[in-house]
Image (cartoon, rainbow, N blue to C red; front, side):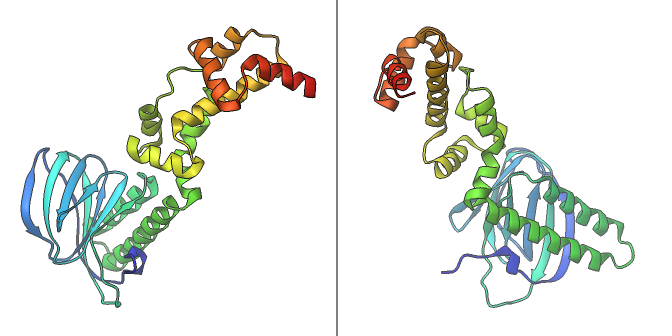
Length: 263
């Protein structure tokens, strides 16, 4: 079955746009949407269950629920969100509950706030203006979500942390949870993206990067094995030598001697 594409939505009427905040640990069971709903979370975390499947609504994920969707809701962390209720025209494609990863993109939040502003203001031709801005919001969500699942889009999500690794490889405290937090995504998802981009987990990438830097020093410096090990982020030379041998097939001393002969 073809995957639901939010960019194909044809909005026939906007019914309401409003800000909404529920206290933490709030539960709602057996609820049902009257219209199609788009939920843009500015902060906090809500969990929706639709037909036994769980969907998170948080600053990184926009949630769409079609009209007449039965759901249960649990507020894990209280936070502000902007709700859009609207009708969609039948275009032959079945709409379905879906979460769209956007990585907390600031433009999406800005557009959502803009729609809310125009809706509250009720100025001249406000409905047309809101409709235009809602289409802009849907386009942004679709574009960023699609990009996030391309290889380039995935790299964009972890780019900052990769550059941090390359600039701070000497530090011993390069931990995956911290790198994931730096990228604004969860640790499990971060590791998954990293593997899909580099074919190795972040810990292995850091280790390999340190070994490459050590190779340069073994050939171009007069530092001892202990000094080189510490300078590239290894806690001790014993572990450094073990990793170096498993990665290159040679001890650091053997590598240095071979490289100098070839050079």
